[in-house]
Figure 1 (cartoon, each protein chain N blue to C red):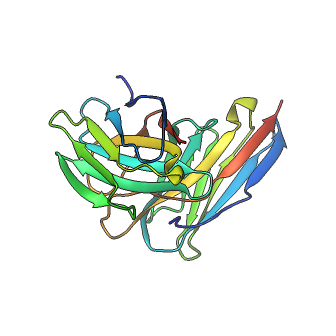
Figure 2 (cartoon, rainbow over the protein chains, first blue to last red; figure 1 turned 120 degrees about the vertical axis):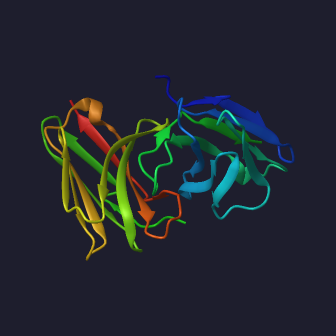
Length: 114
Length: 112
């Protein structure tokens, strides 16, 4: 079974631009979560999607948004990029059974904002 | 914000030695998970322990959970150079909220 894939793997943007990151979950997984990893703040939860609906949201500004498609693929968008948005963005998928169980992470998208 | 802290922040040992990492958290949990990350890549799930469990084993890994102290430990026995990575604990709170709250991580270096 193929793992979680994320595209692109690396991205360079300038302040004020917007960016869209993509995540394809493991086949059969219906829950997709997004996390931001920075040296200063560590790993932080952004949001979780299930059946095209955002079920949970972390403490991030509205510039961070996402969506999920009917095939469970997910995208996250960051508008009006700031230098502090430079980070590794990780996507994780799971079967979505009950409480949050084992998450399967993708390799991440490394975003650099100049 | 992070749920808790891990210690030590960094650990350097020789191959064959055991490595112990500790994690503390702040709120009631449903389960606690340990993940490994190699050089800023994706996270790999290692083991999950539920709040009603006290100890769990998986290969060379042993995890303990003390809910009264809100702490967990990960023991890697007979370490190998390939175990060199960052290790994170992550908690799922007992509120139904489907999100992992990560600790700050321990960087483990295993010298060959």
